[in-house]
View 1: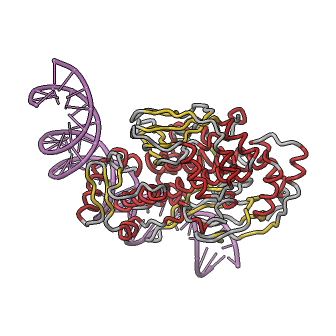
View 2: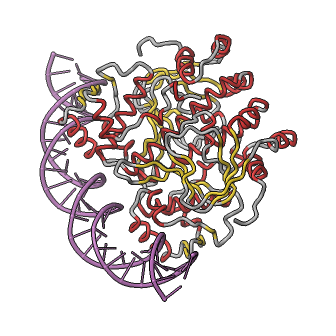
View 3: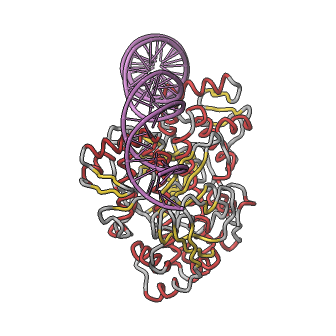
Length: 245
Length: 245
DNA sequence: CGGCCCTTTGAGTACATTCAATACAAGTGG
DNA sequence: CCACTTGTATTGAATGTACTCAAAGGGCCG
């Protein structure tokens, strides 16, 4: 695992984007109690039904949220990239209604709910910034429904790539080639398609010159056209600071 | 439109369920500025891209959240029943990333963001209760992904009926026969199926004796079996007070 | 270099879609 | 109050998109 930024600095950078916090507030954030832990690929971080008392700040690697079917099928509900807190909702809904797992080796910052809650009680602006993060997470899930429900296989795959690109770009990780160590099986479970379909669709997008995929790395050659194919509108990610209040 | 409860009392009843608020806090809630407005069936309440400055408390009727496809297809992202605040997320994400519409004549309580925000600043417990509501909304969206993505047509329809039943039950509206004035076209756009498929599936469920549907009213004859067919686990609705912290 | 996981491709199948046409119900205006 | 209009429900038939099963080819790690 390469050397990485202090977890809290990643969190600060993230929250700065959504809410211009003041120096005193940043100082308060730095008092948060954080334990760093590494997890292996495919390791489960929490499971449906668990009651948790910590939030996980993702420092490095990729995580997924997922639910299962009685038949054993998986549905991936979101991808998480560095800077995200995939289980921030447990602050107020401590019982997990889905599972959280690493799809790459990952580094996490464990922050006790109590520590966050005390900070939220002291400082409404920090609380609002965190609330806002959970709302974006919800917006992503809603758009995922439209994607899985009403787009063609081709548009779905393109949409997922666009979303990952936009979110990685927002944390400075979209420099070509983009490291995206997600297997086609994961893509399939995310977009509700079969591995076969994913493979064919990626090939089509490649042959049309929209993307190049090689060794878990992706290059987007024509973002505009890819977004058109995907019917992708980044609005729902609420990344644009001008769109804030 | 029949006489209905004071909007604020509905909100109070809702929040009481998620957070045991004190009398003084209830009194504060009653100071919220609320405008009651009626909307017609199929009327749009807000549209993708709108910037809004009010939240809508649903007092009577049914609302939906929806997004569109370039091809003009609709995807319904959630149903809302009395007591819900379908655009509570606009408190911190004032730009709508989807549309909100009435699928029945409905009565709404318009509450200015400013009024809610001032209350939240005065009282963290109220703020946390509202935050929690938005988190449940997100949990519903996530489960919707699994439903649309990985369940069979049969299970999907059953799942939607189970969810509506559970949510109506939580506000005392699930007494047989349940008024559920949702067209089959709406069901289709919600579960990403065609109207034909919805119709056939409802017929199957009817012939198996699980439900009766007549004139926009539904009776659930065998909830346990319906939930089994749906692979429905109500955990994600976080309705059980014992599951609170 | 061997094994494992992932990717790629082919062929037959199944589930759901679309198109189409009829039946039914509710509401409107003469 | 009835004829008319519109929207919803129901059913049949042909089509199609994506799935499953299956098997072979790569690439990476130990």
